[in-house]
Amino acid sequence: MNTFPQAKSLKEILAFIEEHRFSFVYISRENCSVCHSVQPQVQEMLKEFPTIHPIQVSADDVPEVAGQFTVFTVPALLLFVEGKETIREARFVVMDELYDKFTRVVENH
Image 1: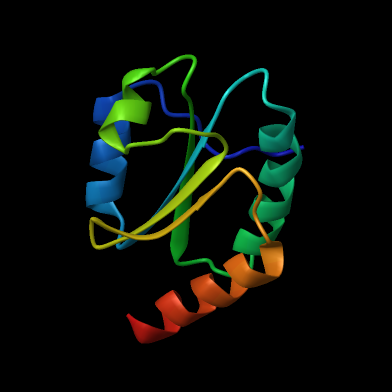
Image 2: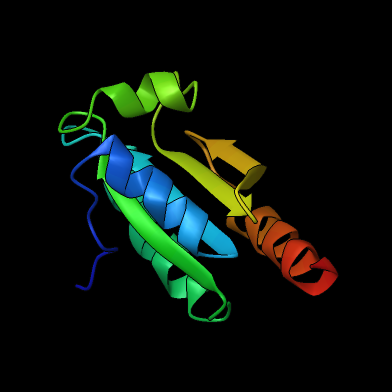
């Protein structure tokens, strides 16, 4: 299974958000079963949104990511448009709703 590119530091994530018009940050933890089941579904969905650039970070490896983005539960799915957080989903994600939100954001920017 392909996975999102992995971020190893908060600095790397912030630079990633800065350099892409649409950047998607997937925050997970190693022992999170929901994270591991949601991620392939989101990855498949993002194939339809080639302008959205994804990156994944484990809050276990980069604990400061939770504080930086005020994340209390994982998975946290954050979409940034031109550096500004536009969509935030966490824990239980309804894929159809997320797809609709992505569509609206991409079409309107």
